[in-house]
Length: 338
Image (cartoon, rainbow, N blue to C red; front, side, top):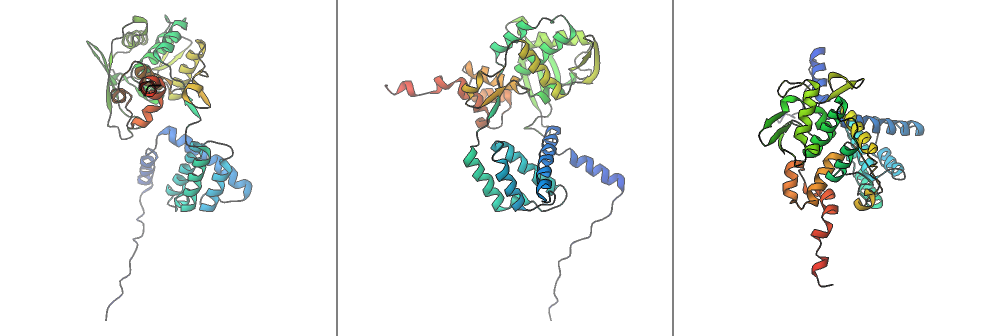
């Protein structure tokens, strides 16, 4: 006589409060701060929509998520709706609930919105190219002040190393080494390198002293009293144009500096929208990185070579900057005998 074997699910083992808190802290670091802010904003919007209709937000069902997708499709772009769905998924999985967004109907709704709205971005950061950077530096009337030296170093170092705003904000003096040919800069962690493998970028001396990133950084280090290797943040807040703080600038502060300096030089980015094929372009914290890719493409640099500095893992992501810049060079229309 055979005995039935029952599968047993082990009961959870109670752990101490401090251990549970440590686990919570560890899991909180699985996403970047920007992603956490973005998901929180998406969930606030979703929760408010659910409350208006008497639907549960968490936990919720796939029919509610599909209805929300249909609702959002009349207001926002496909990329925003995809972000919303990812946030709803995370809110459920993080609390041990079934994921309503994994349902076939939800995925079909998302694909349908993609066909209807298109998946091309409706907005894009204006590339601050080398030409525009010269215009910005020429418009800076405070280059002899600590603020001017800091901002010039942020702009030129960010452009030279194709950095995101978060990467600029995270730089410490331990991440930079001076060599005869220029600087070696280590990006310890980035959007496409969440595990901290790191990337090493070479920044040669510039051909023009006024836009040389190496000289600009050295001028700022001297003004701030910092030195390479002392472990301090490279860029920090300045009070009353003279008192230099020890705490690092936030990524949002970096973006505001870029936007303010571009605006002071009369650069709005609106003219780039038609070239990029999008509805709206604006100067943002991403503009330095975009400017590097675009400037290199305009000089005829091979995309694979560009990607080694920009650290694009996929060439189709880099192509959004390379294609507009090299559209004529890459075209075969002039080679078919028209």
